Image (cartoon, rainbow, N blue to C red; front, side, top):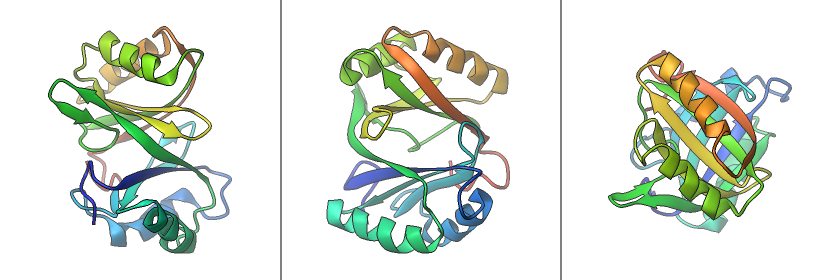
Length: 188
């Protein structure tokens, strides 16, 4: 199994109108959960623009496609996916979404009106490359950036989401939040 920054990583966004309720899908994904080695690194219900989210990985692209077409399909997932293309790298190393989080977490799908790589760098700079900016990735999906914000204070997280929307180059966002301290948040 790949590590947090090895292999090919994917993300799935679950919605209330999906054929199977997101909470049931998340329950099925628990059998694959290992926050350090995957294949599922994180799975939880969310509030906001999507009702559930999972981060998963495989050794290579073919194995990732096999996992989405078997285990995730069998869990009832028929939602939209994003495939990680590249992870933001700070001076101390990679910082990708859902590798490590404070208690309150926001997953932000970001559409840009400038080159995604430049916008991701501007986002990291706007937050001083530190919490509440937990990481970001350029992804292959309808929204080219996936950004994680996090804080141990829920009101600080709300402020951070607003700040993200004001970064130059951020055109539109879809945001979901969860409390990783809740029993239904499956991994930090």
